[in-house]
Image (cartoon, rainbow, N blue to C red; front, top):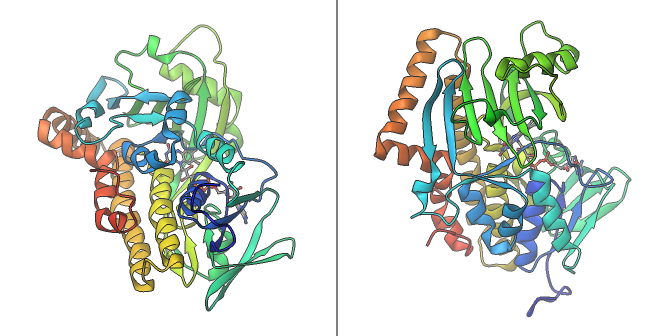
Length: 411
Ligand SMILES: Cc1cc2nc3c(=O)[nH]c(=O)nc-3n(C[C@H](O)[C@H](O)[C@H](O)COP(=O)(O)OP(=O)(O)OC[C@H]3O[C@@H](n4cnc5c(N)ncnc54)[C@H](O)[C@@H]3O)c2cc1C
């Protein structure tokens, strides 16, 4: 047990959901001498292929937990990200290496989200402050005057000093609180397919992260350690079944790089895209973080990253509240700040990315791409754009609050 830590006097928080955000929230609480019961509905850690990009600012926030080197060793360093026109090639290329004077991590780390969870769960196994329970779904929360109760679907009730809802987009915690989840659902569905075929041998100047514009079929091409992941729009009138078929994957990949043999497809999934933010991130001693609190389109890779930022500020702030070092009013301000950043920063940036990429009107598309070219070509604007895209500005926007709880990473 870490020096000075006593499990008998530590306050107790239930965290619902062992996704990346719930795992980080548990790590933050335990580091601040709070006991955690981490409830996960699934029987074991879900290992679906979802988020695979960690931005520099997120790695900075995770630095105190001693896990970034492990993540880097299991991931891929992407120093550049690029915007491309599907027909003419690279339109704009950004070099995150230029942020080396600001961050220890001047790159995007391509590393699947489940690897973060695996690394943290390994740590939790030897931490007496954290009790991880699989096959334990939360069904509802009951706010108390000085705490909150987690009611499991099994009927068991766990009384705690607080509950954090990190239980994903369909959050039972959020629903139980009766919070609104306003926003919109995009008309498009997205298809993600991945292949071990080395696309970069055939496409000139391919970066590890590429946003590819096209009036007929835009796409995102991302490299992970083992695979190229491609994200495509699903066409109007194309059923989910058709989009997920072998023929669809083959046709789409042959359109990226034509080759005489069939593509090996490692994985495929289809999903609907929303932009939604809960009307409150805090109700008494119940806190919402990650997808439970906000969801956005994946263009820009900010969903999970924003969730980790929630976890660092709100789990750290909650620990302060429970130890009496952060006032109730101040903690509400933290929650409102996270909500405002989800609305003004993440949703705005990812929606702008969607417009750049998906515009079918040739004039709109041309203007968006020209703007990107100009941005990348001008030192000042390129630097400014990278500070935004790397989410460093989003962390700067929390400087005062993160300093309050001793978690500001840029000094
Ligand atoms: C295809 C795809 C690609 C994406 N790419 C990116 C990307 O590159 N970058 C990025 O930042 N984001 C990306 N995202 C978004 C990202 O995956 C989510 O923002 C991220 O998973 C949110 O983490 P979370 O921990 O809040 O929720 P989740 O990852 O959904 O985890 C929630 C956990 O809670 C558990 N759970 C659910 N209900 C209950 C319950 N009642 N009780 C207990 N446990 C429960 C679930 O089993 C799960 O383990 C992508 C999403 C998709 C679908």
